[in-house]
Length: 469
Image (cartoon, rainbow, N blue to C red):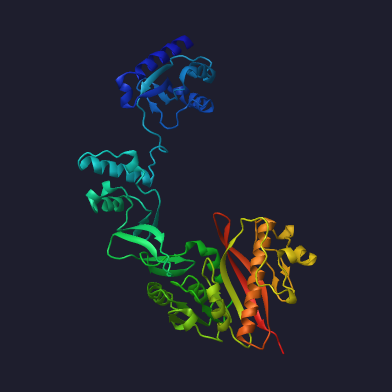
């Protein structure tokens, strides 16, 4: 019986070299239908079953099972896989079997490639070369009926087809409008370089944590990566508080303060006219325009003074240009809390000393800390999954450092960064409010996200209070 099986295999292989192999016919095993299930399981466990194709019932009471052509060792592997006591009526055939359901799933990218390939054949028969294929978008963002694709179709070849290519992509992706994303402009406004390919305008709406944001994707950007910080802000209790948002944008943090944290009053400062247009629309969309005052222009000139219980400084890589404005916005009599964003480089294993630390005030840096201060930077095992690290000095404290999985050296760098800012803020406050003394304390450091290589986006919460007397 096995000799017959091997002869069939040899014949089938010879047939595979014939033209009919181009018709998609491949090796399969024909067995009596009553043994089909048992043989299929044996083939699967032996790694011989071709899962990319489906089995098929034959008219002679047999079932045809797809098998992999594993070369010269296939005969032996089939022998080892034969678990039936009386393997009769077997034969190896070469047949075209339907693709498995899993193999029939086509990704959106594959759909685009197929559509473009057909389009080119229908419009002059140009070949979709590998270079042209690599110029087709693999990633995109969906904003309702608008899809924004990555930079692609850069080859001059595509220009001859005009908007037909864009209409084809839109049809495949089931959208009405199409835009193409570029880099962020370095113009002080962080304007996105986005080109509208199809459609009349780039206005979209996005819902995040129950808040509605609308903006023009060709003029403004939506910082989806700041979601953890927006959620944290939403958990603040700001009833009866006045908040200042120094870099409001389209309302990334302005709206969570108003909608969820319930700030009594908020002053939103923004100098990008396109962002201000979107901000005003978003305030109306969420029904909070009556509790927000928008200051359009340079916050260093327009931000109100002596009004805030809390100031948000959501600018990266550094918000330092706004520190003095933020300190002036705090209430002179009671102070408040500053939420300062910044990017911190953590690539070096040796923490850098903080600048402008005042030794006379016992604000120690990494290489100048007392033993107690170094111990207070260490994270206890029970707090590794929450937030830990407590740094302390006479004028600055750092507690509740959210450093879930960061190495100790990184935590120390974060601590140094926060202590350095706290010291600088105290100096600014005392200069603005001479002859009064102020106390600053780091309440919390929040890790928002990381960039490569070794750059962390952090937010430090600094409590600022005037010293009595």
